[in-house]
Image 1: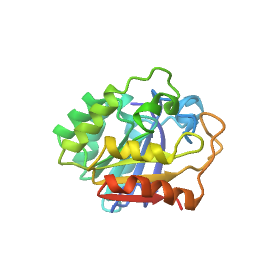
Image 2 (image 1 turned 30 degrees about the vertical axis):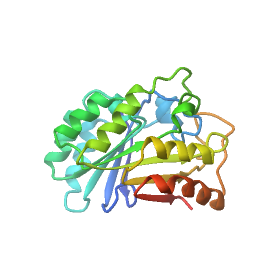
Image 3 (image 1 turned 60 degrees about the horizontal axis):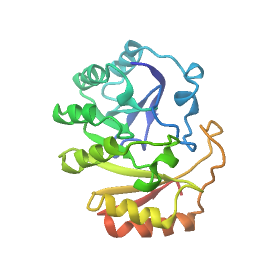
Image 4 (image 1 turned 90 degrees about the horizontal axis):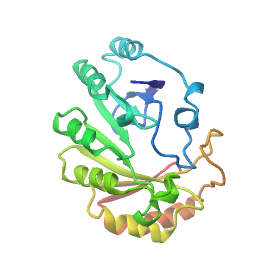
Length: 230
């Protein structure tokens, strides 16, 4: 498994937990607004940490940290994820997975084995605008729809989340996403922040009031809708 970064203390990445966040390198998508370009398109610029170094760190933080977040990039792209998480689990940590939903077979395996306690799945946009938003012409939605359905049927806690970005998202998109994922327990709209390390160009944030308007369009379809980053 290729690890491109480690945040040793994360207070908000894992709801209700004090956690460390492990970032894997590599992603199958090319979302222009992705703020982790070194992990996605320039992995040579990212850190190159061994699994043993990260596991040694986590072993030394037992009792101080509650959980571990596996993020990316796209973690389920990596070989050896299951084995890595099994070792993290053996230390007694709760585990959160961040995923784009493109690998439902591997997601199903983790869910069925009880290897994750919380999943955050990125919903990039409405079904009709997915290919444009992820930067992959002709993108096949089958896997993403399967992963979303897996989570909806699972007993594992999860959230769907969308980073709202101009010019990709509209109020109509929020309604379409809500209709697609109607009944899900949690949906978060995340405010876009230009990290200076974006995959693409031409992206801009919505204002706080505009974010509120987008959230209102999604609210009828989900049990909880909230905004992060304002």
